Image (tube, rainbow, N blue to C red; front, side, top):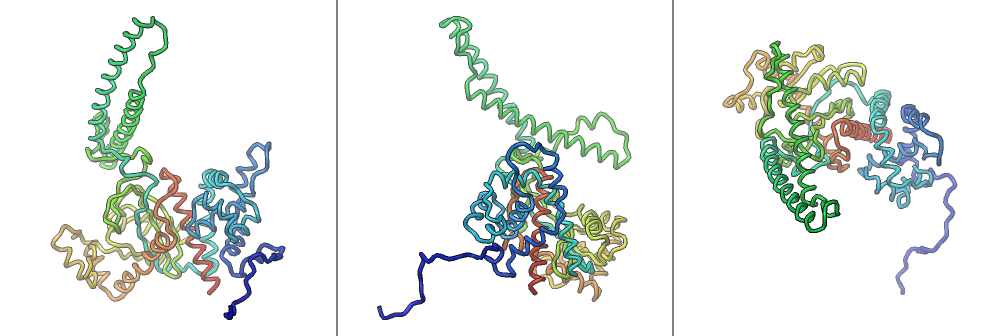
Amino acid sequence: MDKKYREYHPDQLLLLPPDMREWLSEGHLALFISDVVDELDLAAIYRVYEECDRRGQPPYHPRMLVKLLIYAYCKGKPSSRKIEQATTDEVPYRVLAAGACPDHDTIAAFRQRHLKELSGLFVQVLQLCQKAGLVKLGHVALDGSKIKANASKHKAMSYDRMCEKEQELEREVATMLASAQRVDATEDEQYGQGKRGDELPAELARRTSRLKKIREAKAALETEARTKEAERKQLCRETLTSDVEQALPAPKAQRNFTDPESKIMKDGASKSFEQCYNAQVAVDSHAQIIVAAEVTQQANDKQQLAAMFERVRENTGQLPQNGSADAGYFSEKQLTDERVAEMNLYVPPDRQKHGASSVAEAGKQESQRKVPQTPLAQNMREKLRTEVGHAIYKMRKAIVEPVFGQIKECRGFRRFSFRGLEKVSAEWQLIALTHNLLKLFRAKIA
């Protein structure tokens, strides 16, 4: 062969640097994550270990597992099995684990056990971003996005369907019980009383368990309906009467058997209905740092504005000067809430359709439909028509919407790993934490 090639010797033995950090380039994300986690206060996690039984093999170091989990979420690889494989196949994970190879059960159990404490690190990372000058609180924008629950929408059933199915299964169970009794009587005559052969058929056991699940879900919906009725009467300052106990859910009210706390919601991007949670973020305009992150079961955003800005104040110590949100957040009760009384809010009462070049034009498009015509709504329209108001609100999309794109598209987070509102909320805080860490890392490089 006349062609010259570069030297290639796959069997060549190499001596790696004794310091594992030198296996990676100086500005590598894994080293940055390692340094940041070394500075975080993990006392809440350590406390759990101190209270445990000291017998048996010592556990993996909590700081090492925290580093692995945070780096994995940053890279869009939250699966415990993939993390286990990466600790042997990928250099950054091997460096973070210092050569250890925790199995996926250990990683999953650690995350499950300390999920609340891990989510609590969000505020610590946010404070690091503040110290780095990445949070100015001049303009904070709100938005929400539907994130799929760890449950199938096909495992949900409406209240009226539950009632129908309950009656249907009761008839089937009664029929099968009668059949089983006849079989028992026949076998007693044939084999003698007390002999084996009197077990319930498997089909009967399956139908009975299904009936139990449906009754539990039906009772939960009825309890929820009674609670809402009681809250409504208390809000109206009416005297509670026995009719609260008779309150029934709406016929189309649904409950999922896999994750009962998730809800059927319309995904704004795909326009399809999915089993979801509504994930909320408040994003600072300076560097797209998430200053508050919450999860709600409400499909719309009308009740979230004041609570989200209050959470911003709790996390950062102060309210932003300006706050913006799309028309889905417009609510007179929320806009007049004392928690946001000191802020300049820019929330249009009219939804801006595609093709509308301004808020004023959107108002004309909405005039043919039912839109708020109260003094507050009219004042907000006038405020958004001003040069300053238009300029501030125009920035909303560029501030908050790319954040969901970075989380869902770039990092591939489109479905929660956990079930139940409490655990889902904690995981969303972990996602927000890693988003902020990536922003801090890129700012450090810049």
